[in-house]
Length: 210
Figure (cartoon, rainbow, N blue to C red):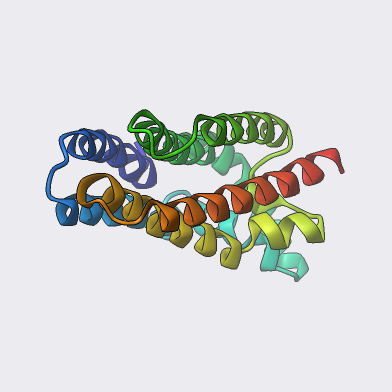
């Protein structure tokens, strides 16, 4: 098993523990700390994939090939693509699956507690299902070619922004449920996060349609 895949799988027991701690109204600081950890592990699995030394640093070449312009480097990428398909063919999909499981469980538990409106959960599920299905036939976000999709979905800035917003939103919702923080602020964060997710999903669909 690749190191990056092991990191992805390590997130699953943590998110299950987070769900139970939320329902038990356990110490919110501990729960939020675990949410921070499970969020950071999403970045860690990417770094492990990038810097993994396997078949000539396949992960590094795969993640950086878009920046390689000269002929020799393009030939190098082409030479390694066979190795990539054999060694890391399931890696990107496993990463997406891990992300979806973590996000879905958090949306579901807060919908179950009555904090997140059901229609928001339905929008998120439909958005992810439709966009992921279309992108699945075209490759991963690292292969996006259209300018709109690259900026709104594939860019590091977009990924960083949505992950930070998820972290802030879900952490605050823990405080709403456990410590009776203002639900109004929670609704504002939910609306902002849902809107951002929908916009990024539209960028994925636009890329697929192109």
